[in-house]
Length: 279
Ligand SMILES: [Zn+2]
Image 1 (tube, protein in one colour):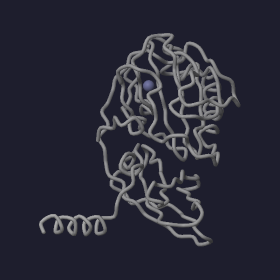
Image 2 (tube, helix red, strand yellow; image 1 turned 120 degrees about the horizontal axis):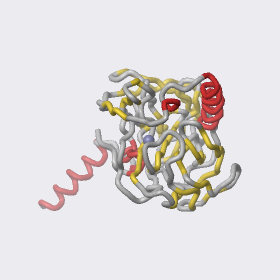
Image 3 (tube, rainbow, N blue to C red; image 1 turned 30 degrees about the vertical axis):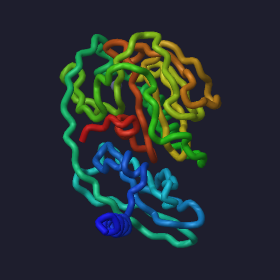
Image 4 (cartoon, helix red, strand yellow; image 1 turned 180 degrees about the vertical axis):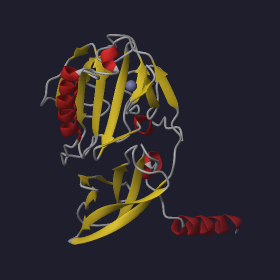
Protein backbone atom coordinates (compact mmCIF):
# COMPACT_ATOMS: atom_id res chain seq x y z
CA UNK A 1 0.00 0.00 0.00
CA UNK A 2 2.78 2.36 1.00
CA UNK A 3 4.60 1.55 -2.24
CA UNK A 4 1.49 2.38 -4.31
CA UNK A 5 1.10 5.67 -2.48
CA UNK A 6 4.73 6.50 -3.17
CA UNK A 7 4.31 5.80 -6.89
CA UNK A 8 1.16 7.92 -7.09
CA UNK A 9 3.00 10.76 -5.34
CA UNK A 10 5.98 10.48 -7.68
CA UNK A 11 3.70 10.40 -10.72
CA UNK A 12 1.90 13.51 -9.49
CA UNK A 13 5.20 15.33 -8.86
CA UNK A 14 6.59 14.46 -12.27
CA UNK A 15 3.56 15.89 -14.07
CA UNK A 16 3.10 18.92 -11.79
CA UNK A 17 6.73 20.03 -12.05
CA UNK A 18 7.66 20.61 -15.67
CA UNK A 19 10.86 18.68 -16.28
CA UNK A 20 13.78 20.94 -17.07
CA UNK A 21 16.03 19.43 -19.71
CA UNK A 22 19.73 18.70 -19.37
CA UNK A 23 20.93 21.70 -21.41
CA UNK A 24 18.78 24.12 -19.42
CA UNK A 25 20.03 22.64 -16.14
CA UNK A 26 23.66 23.00 -17.20
CA UNK A 27 23.63 26.32 -19.08
CA UNK A 28 20.87 28.53 -17.67
CA UNK A 29 22.86 31.25 -15.81
CA UNK A 30 20.89 34.41 -16.64
CA UNK A 31 23.23 37.19 -15.46
CA UNK A 32 25.19 39.83 -17.43
CA UNK A 33 27.96 37.76 -19.08
CA UNK A 34 25.89 34.57 -18.70
CA UNK A 35 23.37 32.51 -20.65
CA UNK A 36 19.56 32.36 -20.61
CA UNK A 37 17.87 29.15 -21.72
CA UNK A 38 14.34 30.02 -22.87
CA UNK A 39 11.76 27.25 -23.38
CA UNK A 40 10.09 27.44 -26.80
CA UNK A 41 7.74 24.46 -26.54
CA UNK A 42 7.00 21.75 -29.08
CA UNK A 43 6.99 22.40 -32.84
CA UNK A 44 7.56 20.46 -36.05
CA UNK A 45 10.44 22.66 -37.21
CA UNK A 46 13.14 24.52 -35.31
CA UNK A 47 11.92 28.04 -34.41
CA UNK A 48 14.04 30.97 -35.64
CA UNK A 49 15.03 33.25 -32.76
CA UNK A 50 16.61 36.70 -32.60
CA UNK A 51 17.90 38.72 -29.64
CA UNK A 52 18.11 42.29 -30.87
CA UNK A 53 19.31 41.86 -34.46
CA UNK A 54 21.41 38.78 -33.71
CA UNK A 55 20.35 35.23 -34.50
CA UNK A 56 20.22 32.96 -31.45
CA UNK A 57 21.21 29.30 -31.04
CA UNK A 58 18.18 26.97 -31.00
CA UNK A 59 18.50 23.37 -29.82
CA UNK A 60 16.19 20.50 -28.99
CA UNK A 61 16.26 19.05 -25.51
CA UNK A 62 16.05 15.28 -25.04
CA UNK A 63 12.47 15.97 -23.86
CA UNK A 64 11.65 17.00 -27.47
CA UNK A 65 11.16 20.63 -26.50
CA UNK A 66 12.91 23.42 -28.40
CA UNK A 67 15.04 25.88 -26.43
CA UNK A 68 16.77 29.15 -27.24
CA UNK A 69 20.27 29.45 -25.75
CA UNK A 70 20.80 33.21 -25.48
CA UNK A 71 24.16 34.87 -24.77
CA UNK A 72 23.78 37.87 -22.43
CA UNK A 73 26.49 40.50 -22.95
CA UNK A 74 28.29 41.99 -19.94
CA UNK A 75 26.84 45.39 -20.86
CA UNK A 76 23.27 44.12 -20.32
CA UNK A 77 21.75 45.88 -17.30
CA UNK A 78 21.52 43.73 -14.16
CA UNK A 79 18.02 42.93 -12.89
CA UNK A 80 16.42 43.76 -16.23
CA UNK A 81 13.78 42.06 -18.36
CA UNK A 82 14.95 41.13 -21.87
CA UNK A 83 13.02 39.90 -24.88
CA UNK A 84 13.66 37.50 -27.73
CA UNK A 85 11.69 37.34 -30.98
CA UNK A 86 10.51 33.87 -31.98
CA UNK A 87 9.27 32.76 -35.41
CA UNK A 88 7.55 29.42 -35.04
CA UNK A 89 5.22 27.60 -37.47
CA UNK A 90 4.58 30.80 -39.43
CA UNK A 91 3.76 32.95 -36.37
CA UNK A 92 5.87 35.55 -34.56
CA UNK A 93 5.86 36.20 -30.86
CA UNK A 94 8.02 37.79 -28.19
CA UNK A 95 9.21 35.90 -25.13
CA UNK A 96 10.77 37.62 -22.16
CA UNK A 97 13.37 36.42 -19.68
CA UNK A 98 14.73 37.92 -16.49
CA UNK A 99 18.41 38.85 -16.11
CA UNK A 100 19.76 38.77 -12.55
CA UNK A 101 23.00 40.25 -11.28
CA UNK A 102 26.57 39.16 -10.66
CA UNK A 103 29.48 40.93 -8.98
CA UNK A 104 32.70 41.07 -10.99
CA UNK A 105 35.85 42.07 -9.11
CA UNK A 106 38.51 44.56 -10.21
CA UNK A 107 41.98 43.47 -11.34
CA UNK A 108 45.08 45.66 -11.63
CA UNK A 109 47.72 44.61 -14.14
CA UNK A 110 51.13 46.07 -14.87
CA UNK A 111 52.42 45.72 -18.43
CA UNK A 112 55.89 46.68 -19.63
CA UNK A 113 54.99 47.97 -23.09
CA UNK A 114 53.27 51.40 -22.71
CA UNK A 115 51.77 50.89 -26.21
CA UNK A 116 49.66 48.10 -24.67
CA UNK A 117 48.00 50.76 -22.46
CA UNK A 118 47.97 53.93 -24.57
CA UNK A 119 48.70 53.03 -28.20
CA UNK A 120 49.92 55.70 -30.66
CA UNK A 121 47.99 56.73 -33.79
CA UNK A 122 49.59 54.06 -35.99
CA UNK A 123 48.80 51.27 -33.54
CA UNK A 124 45.28 52.66 -32.97
CA UNK A 125 44.61 52.31 -36.70
CA UNK A 126 45.90 48.72 -36.62
CA UNK A 127 43.76 47.93 -33.53
CA UNK A 128 40.67 49.39 -35.21
CA UNK A 129 41.15 47.23 -38.32
CA UNK A 130 41.79 44.10 -36.28
CA UNK A 131 38.74 44.77 -34.11
CA UNK A 132 36.54 45.02 -37.22
CA UNK A 133 37.86 41.65 -38.47
CA UNK A 134 37.23 39.98 -35.12
CA UNK A 135 33.76 41.52 -34.72
CA UNK A 136 32.81 40.19 -38.16
CA UNK A 137 33.95 36.70 -37.10
CA UNK A 138 31.78 36.82 -33.96
CA UNK A 139 28.74 37.87 -36.03
CA UNK A 140 28.87 34.77 -38.23
CA UNK A 141 25.98 32.35 -37.94
CA UNK A 142 26.24 28.90 -39.51
CA UNK A 143 23.17 26.65 -39.27
CA UNK A 144 24.90 23.38 -38.28
CA UNK A 145 24.33 22.15 -34.73
CA UNK A 146 27.29 22.07 -32.31
CA UNK A 147 28.78 18.61 -31.73
CA UNK A 148 28.51 19.29 -27.97
CA UNK A 149 27.38 22.30 -25.90
CA UNK A 150 29.11 21.15 -22.72
CA UNK A 151 32.66 21.86 -23.90
CA UNK A 152 35.94 20.07 -23.21
CA UNK A 153 38.69 22.09 -21.51
CA UNK A 154 40.99 23.23 -24.35
CA UNK A 155 44.09 22.74 -22.15
CA UNK A 156 44.63 21.04 -18.80
CA UNK A 157 45.71 23.32 -15.97
CA UNK A 158 44.48 25.69 -13.31
CA UNK A 159 41.93 28.37 -14.12
CA UNK A 160 43.75 31.66 -13.49
CA UNK A 161 41.90 34.91 -14.34
CA UNK A 162 38.12 34.43 -14.43
CA UNK A 163 35.74 36.00 -16.93
CA UNK A 164 34.39 39.52 -16.33
CA UNK A 165 37.19 41.04 -14.23
CA UNK A 166 36.99 44.84 -14.36
CA UNK A 167 40.46 45.62 -15.62
CA UNK A 168 42.99 48.36 -15.05
CA UNK A 169 46.26 48.34 -17.02
CA UNK A 170 48.97 50.42 -15.32
CA UNK A 171 46.14 52.14 -13.45
CA UNK A 172 44.06 52.93 -16.57
CA UNK A 173 40.54 51.43 -16.83
CA UNK A 174 40.18 49.20 -19.91
CA UNK A 175 37.65 46.68 -21.28
CA UNK A 176 36.57 43.92 -18.87
CA UNK A 177 38.14 40.47 -19.19
CA UNK A 178 36.12 38.89 -22.00
CA UNK A 179 37.27 35.32 -21.48
CA UNK A 180 38.72 32.73 -19.15
CA UNK A 181 42.46 32.19 -18.60
CA UNK A 182 44.19 28.85 -18.08
CA UNK A 183 47.66 28.72 -16.55
CA UNK A 184 49.70 26.57 -18.95
CA UNK A 185 53.29 26.43 -20.16
CA UNK A 186 54.41 27.67 -23.56
CA UNK A 187 53.99 24.89 -26.11
CA UNK A 188 51.04 23.16 -24.39
CA UNK A 189 48.76 21.84 -27.19
CA UNK A 190 45.34 23.52 -27.39
CA UNK A 191 42.49 21.19 -28.34
CA UNK A 192 39.19 22.16 -29.97
CA UNK A 193 36.57 21.98 -27.15
CA UNK A 194 33.95 20.93 -29.73
CA UNK A 195 34.02 20.26 -33.46
CA UNK A 196 34.05 23.34 -35.67
CA UNK A 197 35.40 25.32 -38.57
CA UNK A 198 38.31 27.78 -38.40
CA UNK A 199 36.86 31.16 -39.44
CA UNK A 200 39.70 33.56 -38.58
CA UNK A 201 43.41 33.32 -37.84
CA UNK A 202 45.62 36.31 -37.10
CA UNK A 203 48.48 37.88 -35.19
CA UNK A 204 46.74 40.76 -33.42
CA UNK A 205 48.05 43.71 -31.42
CA UNK A 206 46.34 42.80 -28.13
CA UNK A 207 45.36 39.15 -28.62
CA UNK A 208 48.60 38.00 -30.27
CA UNK A 209 48.43 34.82 -32.36
CA UNK A 210 44.73 33.97 -32.39
CA UNK A 211 42.34 31.32 -33.75
CA UNK A 212 38.54 31.64 -34.07
CA UNK A 213 36.49 28.43 -34.29
CA UNK A 214 32.81 28.38 -35.28
CA UNK A 215 31.06 25.48 -33.49
CA UNK A 216 27.72 26.20 -35.26
CA UNK A 217 24.62 28.30 -34.49
CA UNK A 218 26.64 31.41 -33.58
CA UNK A 219 28.55 29.46 -30.88
CA UNK A 220 32.13 30.67 -31.41
CA UNK A 221 35.42 30.16 -29.53
CA UNK A 222 38.49 32.40 -29.68
CA UNK A 223 41.95 31.27 -28.48
CA UNK A 224 44.61 33.97 -27.87
CA UNK A 225 48.30 34.62 -27.13
CA UNK A 226 49.37 31.41 -28.93
CA UNK A 227 53.07 30.69 -29.59
CA UNK A 228 52.13 28.64 -32.67
CA UNK A 229 49.05 28.22 -34.85
CA UNK A 230 48.52 24.77 -36.41
CA UNK A 231 45.37 25.45 -38.50
CA UNK A 232 44.20 27.49 -41.50
CA UNK A 233 41.02 29.45 -42.23
CA UNK A 234 38.36 27.15 -43.71
CA UNK A 235 39.74 24.04 -42.03
CA UNK A 236 37.24 21.72 -40.29
CA UNK A 237 38.25 20.54 -36.83
CA UNK A 238 37.16 17.47 -34.97
CA UNK A 239 36.42 17.68 -31.26
CA UNK A 240 39.79 17.37 -29.52
CA UNK A 241 41.90 18.24 -32.57
CA UNK A 242 44.99 20.35 -31.79
CA UNK A 243 44.71 23.88 -33.20
CA UNK A 244 47.83 25.51 -31.76
CA UNK A 245 50.08 25.93 -28.75
CA UNK A 246 49.99 28.09 -25.63
CA UNK A 247 52.20 31.20 -25.65
CA UNK A 248 52.46 34.82 -24.52
CA UNK A 249 52.08 36.78 -27.78
CA UNK A 250 50.23 40.13 -27.76
CA UNK A 251 49.31 41.84 -24.47
CA UNK A 252 50.19 39.05 -22.01
CA UNK A 253 52.21 39.15 -18.82
CA UNK A 254 53.24 35.48 -19.19
CA UNK A 255 52.31 32.26 -21.01
CA UNK A 256 48.64 31.30 -20.61
CA UNK A 257 45.61 30.47 -22.75
CA UNK A 258 42.91 33.12 -23.02
CA UNK A 259 39.65 31.52 -24.25
CA UNK A 260 36.54 33.46 -25.27
CA UNK A 261 33.15 31.90 -25.85
CA UNK A 262 30.51 33.84 -27.78
CA UNK A 263 26.80 33.26 -28.38
CA UNK A 264 24.77 35.58 -30.65
CA UNK A 265 27.78 37.94 -30.71
CA UNK A 266 27.81 38.25 -26.90
CA UNK A 267 30.93 37.20 -25.05
CA UNK A 268 29.86 34.95 -22.19
CA UNK A 269 31.60 33.16 -19.32
CA UNK A 270 33.37 30.05 -20.73
CA UNK A 271 33.26 28.51 -17.21
CA UNK A 272 29.52 27.85 -17.78
CA UNK A 273 30.32 25.41 -20.61
CA UNK A 274 32.88 23.40 -18.62
CA UNK A 275 30.72 23.14 -15.49
CA UNK A 276 32.93 25.57 -13.52
CA UNK A 277 30.59 28.59 -13.24
CA UNK A 278 30.63 30.45 -9.91
CA UNK A 279 27.56 32.64 -9.27
ZN1 LIG B 1 42.61 36.51 -20.51
